[in-house]
Figure 1 (cartoon, helix red, strand yellow):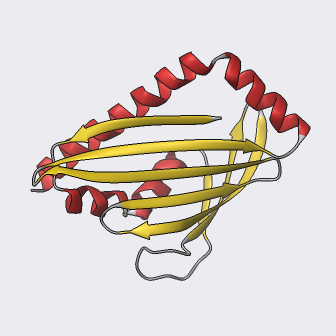
Figure 2 (cartoon, rainbow, N blue to C red):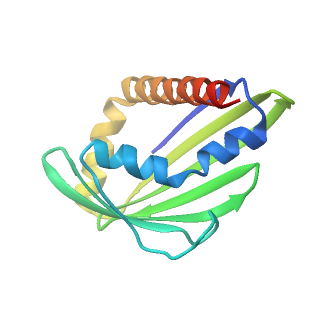
Amino acid sequence: MKFSAREDIEASIEDVFAALSEFETFERQAMRRGAEVQRVDDLQTPGVGASWRVAFTMRGRRRDMNLQLVRYDAPNEMGFTAKSPGMDAAFDVELLALSRTRTRMAVALELTPLNLASRLLVQSLKLAKSNLTKRYKQRVADYAKQLEERLKRSA
């Protein structure tokens, strides 16, 4: 099952990529929402091989996941894989410079079930795909707007 969204941001591609590469910010946001996040690599700068152990509660059950940065092509794209006991996921962020001060961000998430329980979960998600796609696109749009405002403040 795949979700994707595109948003334009009023900032340079370099600034957007730098903001997306501030992984500590995402770690803090996840922890504020109740997730347990632990960085398990020892990289000093963002790059391929960065990895995290993440635990969170979804649908009343604790979920454990290993997240790894598998593609890092500054300032164009980042790709992550997430592995959990029942499901794999791929999360890709691609940036395209539309002008010196405008960047298009494309964000894609693909879920791959690995067992029967996960297949049933994905099937139930497919039944609500239009609603979930709408919510996904809205979340990406909200994030793009917040990112744009943060970059304008820091400029």
